[in-house]
Image 1 (cartoon, rainbow, N blue to C red):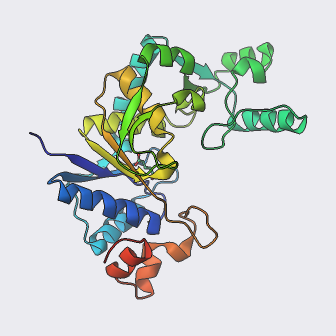
Image 2: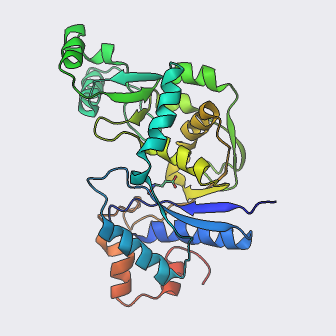
Length: 293
Ligand code: GLU
């Protein structure tokens, strides 16, 4: 039987914080306990914000925590062709829509509707759902942007995609999830509407590249924070559409800051580098994230 494959997949756009430490440690320990492999993947599709010095810093932080990973490390920015091939496959089956509306245009239409007392649905991350370009822009404006060759975002035509993906879609969850879900979870990708699969400035998106890479790297166990629990529904749909294998998912609790909010990379006082500079040891980090020493 082949060995389980785990991965830790940070974006090298800042220093790792305590939340990343928990994710990396849980991943690494589950891999070791199951005799599995452990991979590091740099999710650097946002080439503006991701930097080589952050990659070096991530390697340094992981080494300090005693976490060893296989080489070479996959860097998503080197594989745009793989994501484009997946997009072309979906496109050929009529599962994509192109959209000129910007995130700002969607947000301001949602804000205007809400101000008038109308409800505007939000996705599980709190982002206003995309209602289709026709609901946001006039026909003339859509034609003008098309004629001017303005860049468009590529979105999954969710309703059509769900029909094509087959129902019911589920996943196996071994973690906690926000509602304490463990076992078989029903995927509800419709909650995300027509999700973006490629941006105007980036030829892919988090959802598309994570699914393509987990399959290409033969990842069997996805261990990550509970903030990505809902997004797993989109990942399962894409896997079904692209004929990719289904990993087991384990969403772990998040490390919250003193304000009760999720940690951010901009929050310097919880960065591993700063804690280390202040004299913290790897065992201190384990204690801070609630793992046994
Ligand atoms: N790159 C994502 C992040 O840093 C994690 C993706 C995943 O584990 O699926 O939040």
